[in-house]
Image 1 (cartoon, rainbow, N blue to C red):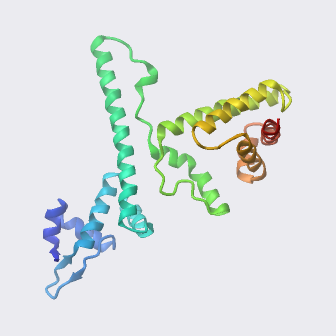
Image 2: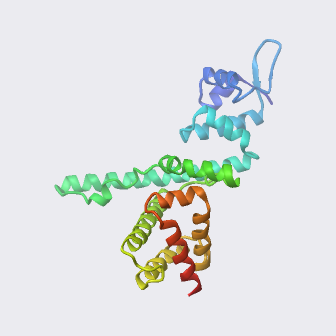
Length: 248
């Protein structure tokens, strides 16, 4: 069965002008155009329109949507990805509502709200994607690995991991600056705590994995420079300390 542009507009609750625009930019092409010049759409086009509208709900641009639909292998994969994105947004909105409720409650009681709770839910996945963009571009170009491909970012988890990384690297930097040997007891305790965090989050399995990761950071130009920009010698110090811990 084929549907006219007017019928599709009514079904999908969009304007005819919108459908004309989607056709113009080759985002949604009608199944056929009859002799009278009417655009006609089939079930396949309706499914694609649904996918487009899901992405629009997630604030993707039309150009981004077009690229995503061209890259995705099929409808099931697209829907699964969109579901993950919508669930992540739902979780963030629920957190924002909770923050708002707590703000209302504190204000009604004439109390000051806990500063740590005031901004929960305001973190955006896009901010993390922007923060990881340079590293991801490098990994794609150098190793063919897309860090963000088909991945929904758990913002709270990323914030926790970033805080742990800052804590650990800050401790290693301080140890290097104060002249502690790579196998000093305090350095080993610092590494042990960091490995525990990484294993709990599933990033590594054991100390050997961490030593391998540290060796990669030393040998790879991008990651070595990132560490060396914090403190000269940090990449080397980290690698030797990690390997010492793994073989102890």
